[in-house]
Image (cartoon, rainbow, N blue to C red):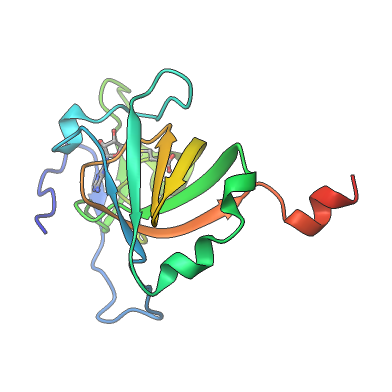
Length: 155
Ligand SMILES: C[S@@+](CC[C@H](N)C(=O)[O-])C[C@H]1O[C@@H](n2cnc3c(N)ncnc32)[C@H](O)[C@@H]1O
């Protein structure tokens, strides 16, 4: 996995801690039409964006039971090509810098991205969705409905 090496004038990088505090499981892989960062949209479009595939790995497919009841899902993914050390960043054409936590850049200490997508279908562990904005092959870390089934049945 190659990580972007570029840093812009005015941006600030810090040394990363020597070790992490926790571990995540990559539970699947996101398949999109975009081979690199530059070709991705800045934000996904759940209406007009292309249909993307979310391939869930074993043994996690059993955790999909019931997900079909949702028209929208929050998808969390790991921006595997992003640097993690730039704390002040200059978004392209912004003309000024912002702290990483003040923007939705993929460059952050924990490169976790979130998108609310339109759920179109599920076939043998593969979800079809619209609304993603990531490189083909981006690791999946979680899928969440907007609310729990128990909460929906009482409203
Ligand atoms: C601005 S971020 C928004 C991500 C997510 N929707 C969010 O708000 O958390 C989307 C951009 O991240 C970059 N990107 C996409 N996939 C990536 C990956 N796997 N690694 C690093 N950068 C990625 C692309 O430049 C894309 O336009």
